[in-house]
Image (cartoon, rainbow over all chains, first blue to last red; front, side, top):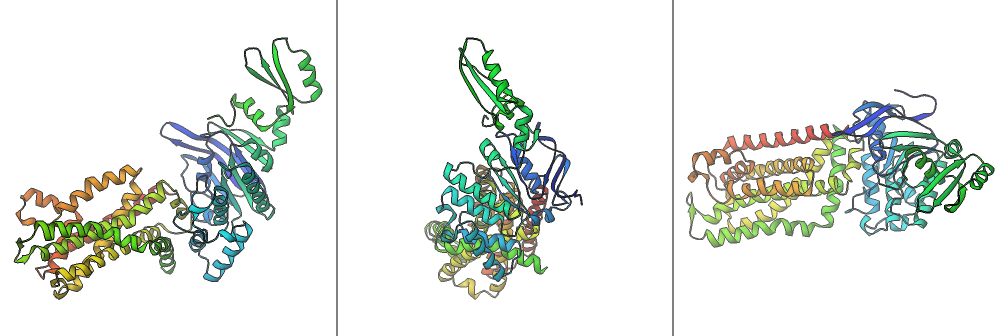
Length: 291
Length: 252
């Protein structure tokens, strides 16, 4: 059993190889109790592989991971009891209703009949699905399906909730409702580990983010801290041949000075606050949403 | 032990909910093939033919019941599991739950057993009208026991193939390469005695052959092939262990 202070997720040099490709390589990170931790990276960066290892669905090739103090390889059943998981894809039984899916989860976690009924009603109300409880999963919109998945993942009162791309494919309005739900869960004491490739999601929700690229952790910290390290202000310049350049500055004054020094072939200039995408581009040379 | 039984029931529970919703469709789809075989081979091709002193209909009904247990149990256990595992990925939710591999395999197999029994019972009732000799056989209870064992054997096979398959194509390939030849060659529609020695030996490597032999002997009150019953149980144990091993290998 490995646990330091309030660390609830610990990985040490975690690696996973599929044939000749390393999905993740020497990943070491810590997630603390009560935080919303965002794992940010483009598709194929290794986010889902990390979640699958942490949730005991995939064995790592090397390295160790502890969740809630339990080694994922030595005590997978203990890990499973203490976590909830919402996968990237719809992972509910489409032949069952929302209530039946929740009942299945409650039964799998050995809830007695009366407790099961009470917990299901409580959660349906919590995620706002009471009126859809007896509808087949297939008949729900994407946003309602996500909420049903959250409800199912919470049935056994997990201390940590893993959300793999929780808002992918949702419209802007539904995405914000999902964010509200995630914040509410966190306020109620659930530690959240989420993966996303949406910059604004990581910035809006996460206390800390880890940026992953080609299976390796390339930055870790609070969003504001990462932006400060790189430069809080970004000057975007477009030159005559259409190429765009980014330069980062710690203050607006320095950025303005730089603009004055630009040559005449610059077609357009924009000064704005830096965001996590800038951090990612600076570190990797490509955007988060690029595949 | 009580926990294991409770978990088996839980895994089965979800499949039973689906079955309850689509019970009519389940019965109809599991009966269509055997009824077509019965009409084509029993009433059509086999009219006037006798085997072991019985009419061809009396002879073929137990074989078609064996066939129904195979398709019903195999598809009942394997089809949904394979789709849930590879396409909907909702099988991951069961893998992540604090439930033993044994319970998962048994729960999923029982879903197939129940579907197999439903199909076989419906066909048996039809078969009893066509060939009442089955119920009159002193070995009728043994007939029912073999039927249930057969359901388990093919349900475990369905679970095993659903665990091994990496695509929908893999399931189709298995059906076409193994189940289809088994359907026609395993003594379902004819006696194996007339076949060349080498082919007869090869056909004894298929579980449906033993299921057909046992069911037919019990239905027609013939000397019972106990070695076939042992072989059938052996197949069941092997498929069950295969399920456990493959699930152990793939999960943490």
